[in-house]
Amino acid sequence: MNEIRTRRRDFLRTAAAGTAGIVLGGPALAAAESNGLVIEEPFHGAVLNRRHGTEVDGGLKIPVTVKASAARRVLVNGQAAVRQGQRHVAQIVLRQSETDIVAVADGNAGRRQVRARVVWDRHSRPRYRFSSDDNSFFLRDVAQQGYRSLFDCGYLDMLRKLHAKYGAKFVLNIYYTTGDDFQLPQFPDRYKPEWKDNADWLKLAFHAHADQPARPYQDAPPEKLLADFDQVAEQIVRFAGEQTYSPPTVIHWGMVRPSALKPLSGRGVRVLSGYFRRWNDAWDVNYRLDDVRSEYLSRHDALKDFDSGIVFSRVDIVCNSTPLEQVVPTLQPLAKDPNQAEVMDLFTHEQYFWPFYTNYLPDHPQRLDAAIRWVTEHGYQPVFFHEGFLGGPA
Image 1 (tube, helix red, strand yellow):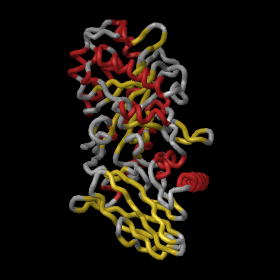
Image 2: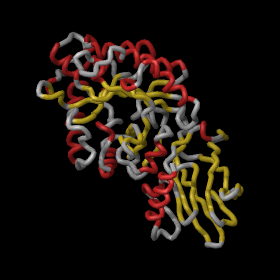
Image 3: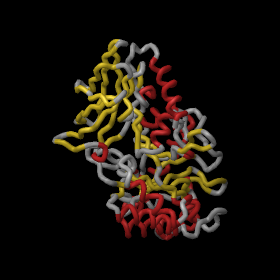
């Protein structure tokens, strides 16, 4: 944690150079800081809901904590803050979907100003989404077997049963090709009416051109990513219809160049989910966000990147990596943490369903059932992230 704080301080001091004491725009606002004046809470880009404050008529009252060394007085959006040691705390009311928080400090160093921006999830409710990655085997299976119904495929039948049992909704993130023996143009369009009939709970989205190579877009130019994106999207609309298409919320391996974010937003991407975990002394599966924001996302539901307009969501559970007996213990603590309780981002990978796969999991369906049963019993409603704001009303 100390390492993160040091990196945040050094990064923001560099970013703030030449701004006359005002930190504006982009990653520099990840934790707003200027010349010893810091908005510690809430975090720049934070997505706030009723769990983070007190609901008042037409707004959400939240505390703002400002660290201000040698400051005689601190104002936050015009409200006088109360000194608590080196920190100053003020209460402000959010009334818009996005609010700029401006802290002004007077002291021996003169007047200093710093700002951060937060998002108010005004109509938030407990909700979950279920995303499945690396999908291609079921498409090959349906195309090669020529089933009468999509749901004669065991994988899709499993998902339909979970929908019937719990009302669950699924987004299947698909590849263009399984390899030498199958590509999306081989998938027939005769199932289009059935896709349409089930589009209220079953969507398809771009994931990558293929499973290999690993990390295909981590260093690739945005043009490569967008070309693959468009190729898959075109095929989804062709064989399943526009109503089944979903903008992607997971890019293969969760790594893209920062320059790809705005173009992805231009393609309708509103949310990107990742792990935001520290592996081998570096943050990974984090869409190459800076360390400060990655650390924040490792313990919060979501964070908005204002430059691109994309909200980043942290995956709460990967079912294929979580033993059946650990599914509930993995989810339970999250519901007790106001920073992680509102949105459950559930996740798995298709390949573990299939007996021919090297790492086949015989209890894969049971793991999905356990996760969905738990969120359902605890009042979470199924959503698609691309609808409204993180699946909630806009």
